[in-house]
Image 1 (cartoon, one colour):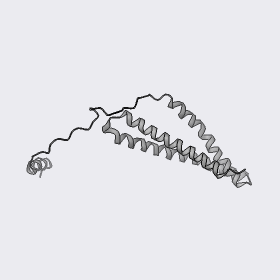
Image 2 (tube, one colour):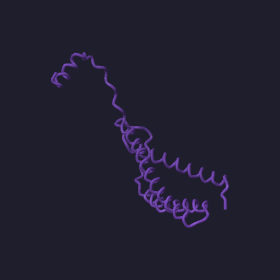
Image 3 (cartoon, rainbow, N blue to C red):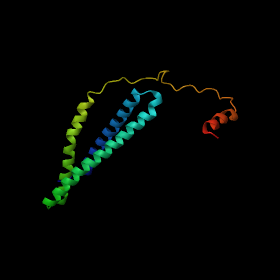
Length: 147
């Protein structure tokens, strides 16, 4: 049987919407538990590990797909059916991992979102410019190098 473009589009929309919402929630959760001065490092850490997870996932499930496709093409005369069976195998193999991630998410510590940042999290106030001359700054630096 053939799946219509409308059904495929609906499935892809639901998948994309769920993935997009999930990614933002995790980023905001991480940003909520770190100090304001660490927001950049925390956000980049989330994106880095998301990229590493994507890389590993594509490698593992790409290998599952390639193995299933090779086996399907060798034993079947129907090439489209072999592709369909291979991709079905990938989705079935993802289910236990998805279920485990869902169950583990229930054990995450709940931390209320902060409405404003506290003064202890705020960046330090810049000080007034120094009136020190460049000679007073340069002399100790040159002395440390031995010149």
